[in-house]
Image 1 (spheres, rainbow, N blue to C red):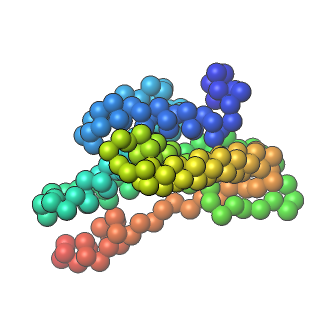
Image 2 (cartoon, rainbow, N blue to C red):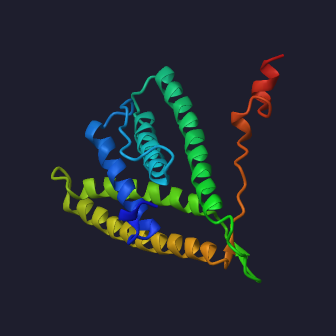
Length: 209
């Protein structure tokens, strides 16, 4: 980890990078924009920035496809783009887990150590999406064209999201510390999305005959 990040917890590093990536996306507010990743390729920071950019684009693709006036052909294109984005997202999560696996490969596992229900990267995936929820809920509470009731509901939701951010950040940092100290061990399972595999999706392999 770069020296400038030494005083920060991993969740704080994630939050900083995710906020930056989300703000960068909204400079364009365009699902076809090309991001400028400020972090060196091959670093965990670079992967985290890419992860949140993918999530930000997919967030807005999900908005677009729900337009009741969208044409069926365009909706199908967006749906396929979302499918591809989901695969990219999964790949990035696995790359982030590879970082943790390599970083902790020499850790001595303690007797009685346990596995976690999710890996660090899947928890970080949830944090990335949570930061997008917070960003967009903050946009809602700034609106001047809605009722006081709408603003009150959004402020209440924003408070819950911020509490969730605190809780999830704490859980991520605790999990990472437990892995580094040998109290928990990592076990990852590569995603086996059968519908994306032409050799496993019967609709795809039957059509090849």
